[in-house]
Length: 358
Image (cartoon, rainbow, N blue to C red; front, side, top):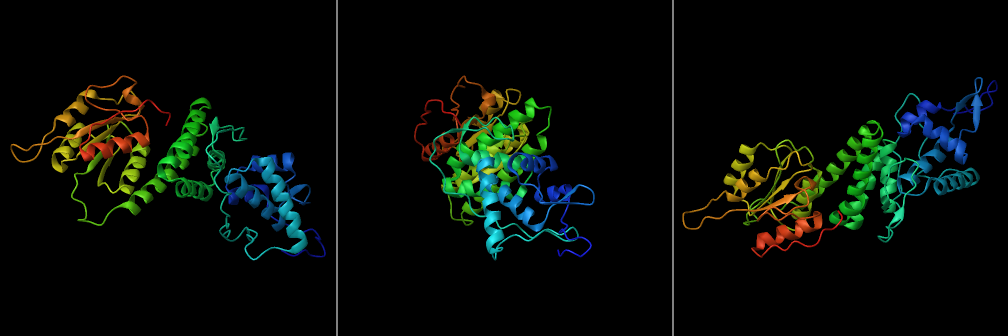
């Protein structure tokens, strides 16, 4: 955008337009301007704020760094320094272009975050206000991206966590803690963060299902009985089952996922039809935990007379409470669920370890 003789100041876009294009709120942009000096350099048409291409590049760098888990103050210093370097040397060949009001913004080429830090916990004081507690740096970056409703950054952070740490570790140390933090914020803030939880859940589900599909064996290459995963009637929380399905598929097991709120008749019919070696039933709340149905599933038999078998039923989720259910083992977390399923498929006794935080 070039300046004219009548208007020597380069005119950019408004704060509202830039916020929509970057997936952040106008309040966030104003806060970054006030706290860190990441504001527009020009004001035209009375005192209206206008963001130039250089201003936009600086804010995009801020978004990229905070999405990677860099603390906002540190990210702001790096963004200002990069803007100063850019002003001296000119934009590089991969610099994002300035978004025009009448065209689509080109995709932002994000750099991968720094190498994953060790699993030592760090207390989060994220400006998003999410109560993350002692979590990894990736959790803070993922939470910030979700609160900003930055879909591309959320998917990038989720995918990179799985690729860097493996599915089970990523679930237990990054994905599940961030989901719990968003859920607690939703419960305590009058439903203000419902959209954040939905966005985050959708992208985590997409990554888990992608991992599951990638790990599927070719048709006809497995003769082992399947593992059947299902939510109990009325239960809508499927993400833990999706994580377990992907982890089991990575280990070469055939998996059948029935998903949310499976009616009792459908669940028992599926057990009879498929002859699973293991059935895991998920209950997120006490209202959906049905011990009688779990025992019915464990009693279903199939096979030729004289050689009938029945599945090993595992109980997953906090809905079952802390008390053990007779003859129905309860894995405490994803890692234990994988270990117990593998042991059941091999026909070895199931040993339930001490309670671990998931």
